[in-house]
Image (cartoon, rainbow, N blue to C red; front, side):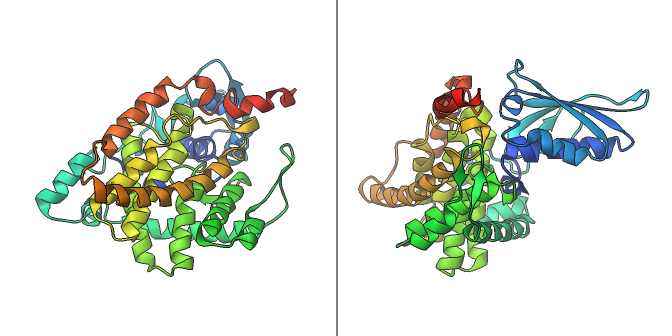
Length: 393
């Protein structure tokens, strides 16, 4: 299993796969070949199909500046990857093939960037529970044993989440001219009459900041970043929960996101929105259960419920923007995270053991994601996006 701190990367919106990942790839290449005066970049798959709406070409050009950069779009190659090559006069540098793995993680065939390095020895929640029982330790102790700097990294991630929520709550106006979409978070917050309504406003605040291309924390992606940020802000700001406790809960939630990333995918381009919002809902449910001091069985059950009932959810951003239906889905999933914990507690009182484990649902999610038509995996060629397709012409 990979580093949990990488589930909570800090970067610029609107999409971890389409902005953070290409930006990191371009940065690595630029560092490796600093003398290049010109770059050729080709985007494929979802990076090409929704690259304009996600600012992929812009972030690449900004990263490689001041060198001249030409970005082309290959709509035929279905794999979500980019090719980058630099040159200086007659000297041509090696071409890199870069795969976007979701959440800003990448794989570079010609360069070791560290994203695929294993940090934890166990790759299933069943195996992790076995280790906890064998060593008689709690889950956070297990995490810090293999990732001692985890809390320090999550502290910075949480600070960025808090800043993001507050920026979003205090910003109004037109967000996207093509969609004629106006920010809603500030008005939702003013009209909120209860805790859950405020949590929806917090999720909207992050979603709208992300769509504006501002600095966000992935959780596990930028398209789903509003869910964990909303929960963290609610407990820290509204309930005055100790910051270290919130960070610990983020780490626990991160375990479930990391396991999905390891055994399925967190990329909407590979598994649909079940991979993004569904994963974040599972993480959020685990986080809430931990903050409520529930036993590990309830934490797992809540996470399992959170992802199970997002199976098959499509990724169909209208006109390629991470706005519709993405922002609203974040608001819905926050509520479902709380509901998953409530249901997990209620079911545990009736049926002590669940027939469905978290690991089972992840396997099912992986299968389901592969069966989704390509049109329903962040290409803007199907689903809700299809309803607006004619407006492109």
